[in-house]
Length: 357
Image (cartoon, rainbow, N blue to C red):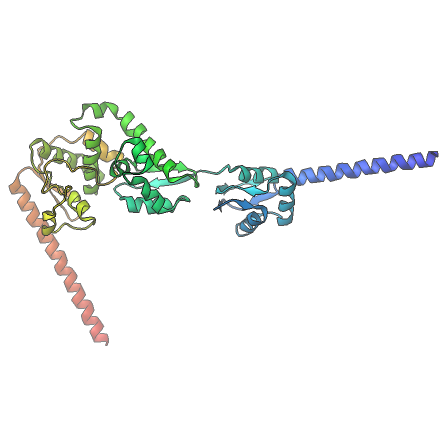
């Protein structure tokens, strides 16, 4: 080989290595560049099901995400990340293709907040929860059937299990199953109520099931949190005197409605109607919050036996039936006045519409 040919070969080899190094470094930079995918603002990416590269690119194009579609598909194929798991992914930074695609492929989701409201029912609870996770409301509500695997495993009826859905805000994964979500919330009840309040529960005249039942009635009755210990003390006074509990919320639960109780409603023949049965109803009527449970564990010590609603949503409490009778008359008078005002407004509105015609 001539010296010229040798030098030419060496030059060509060096040039090849330089080009190869450049290509390698360029490819590596493109694959691992932290700005390859960039969220212009905090954005939530939802993948409802297993998604491929092209489908992922389609979804990203609908969001305020900066990325190169062709380059991302090229990177995904080269790196071996071609399919991505369902989930909720919170994007709020700059990502390399390797970081971004690998997290989605492995299903490394961002947990979201799920709020459980107090004093609700199974239907509303299920619809509210379904709006915050992937599961549908019917599959969530099914967890509170007596025959559900969760209820059977924990040893509760469906109503008892639902009453232990402690109101709070929880972090759960969007794709969590209804069973896992219900178990997650129930564990909070165990931790915050059964364990942390164990001493108060042991001192109570009621067992834990009775505590939850009474707390559920207090939850429904009280519109103002500061009244909960007073209302609890009133109900306990009635129970200790072997009086009928006569709790309007239990009548509404029996009726399946939330409205003002009418006189004829008290006659409904139902095991939850505490105007007809003595003692506590057979089960809880809603999911009480911690304040309602504490109110049963630490009721206010007083002599009240009666209460009637006040216009502002609070209650007027009485020690004797005569006091209660006067307070009830004032309440009925206020109600009649509200009806009179409403009818007057309706007449005035009708007269105005007729005058315009």
